Image 1: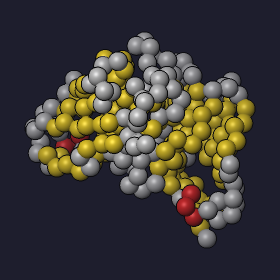
Image 2 (image 1 turned 30 degrees about the vertical axis):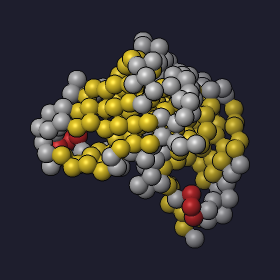
Image 3 (image 1 turned 180 degrees about the horizontal axis):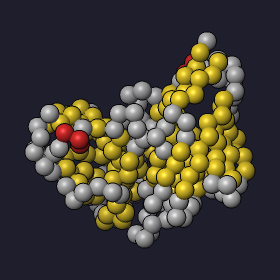
Image 4 (image 1 turned 90 degrees about the vertical axis):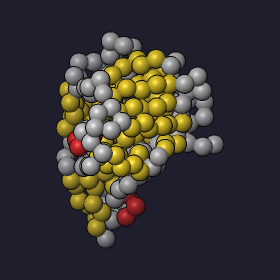
Length: 113
Length: 113
């Protein structure tokens, strides 16, 4: 099976930078995804890392170290609208050949003015 | 281009009843996955459908079943409802069954009383 650990809550100031960490344990591994979910909304895809290194998409960046089973999401120039829950999710192979995502419990990001 | 649509948005059922939830995937997507999200938790993978077949299943009892139609839309059925089945049920579609990016619908909020 798979398990993921991420902090339950992080607080940051508007305009600052925040990093949300994720460690995982899997029996196989394709890649690590990050999703954002506002209260009452649907999860929306932010990024995906299959290989080691940093992927940058605008104000958001995501990092993966496969050898450390570790990744993080970096949010820069924080805005109030970034207040949301952030989930890391692992794609891993299964016997059926298809693969659903295994999600962490989520990190609630609180942005203060 | 419509995204993933789910119906109904909210539903109240009595313990022991049966429920059917529906999902239309994003145009062109052929793979549909279903997730259960309890309050304050991350989505938990129920199962995935591709080419009208269940390809992978998470740790959910047989009371949870599904179907995919030739137009790629999907249904989730839950029999003998328990109070613990109360949750947000999310449908996600992707272009390929191993796609890194899943598009989620707004979900169906199921309350079992």
